[in-house]
Length: 211
Image 1 (cartoon, rainbow, N blue to C red):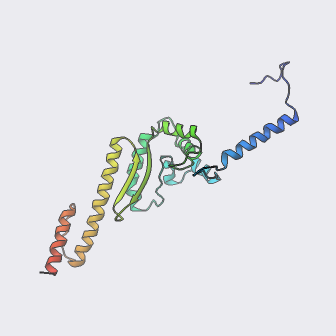
Image 2: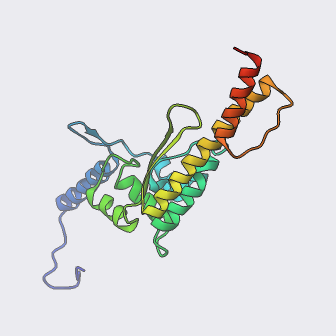
Image 3: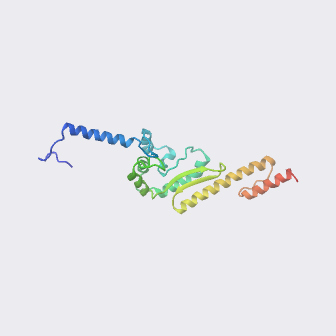
């Protein structure tokens, strides 16, 4: 700390004060402005990023993990939400507030799972969360064919696999039941097995179309 009462203290000139102010303004602008280097582009930060950090809406509170689930009323949200809670429980240090992790997510990772805005802040986020993240989720061949991509310990990977299997099983069974009931509205429905429904549907189709 500068001792202004010291006989060696020399107050800055007007020019030095203006230069210091200019450097501070330039640094502030560069801190918020996106940059471009080769194929990598970072975005310009907006006031909505501060809102996301300090006043998150719903699922945004877990945004530091990576992927987002935009429609909180969807069946996908209900299927994935338990996994997100488990990831958050494993990733967030007990002493660390989520707003700080979201801050690192914005200013370190550019609110992305592929870009890096500030290497030091990005590394700090990875260190605090032990590298745990929710990279992506999507459906592939059918709307119930859920695919989940996370970076996490084995027990969380297993949980993601069970969610994928359960979501597929429930969706496939619903699809088969609709086809069965379209052929026989009074058909007996016993939930729990895709194979049983496939056999039941096959028998109904053979009965309606005998060889």
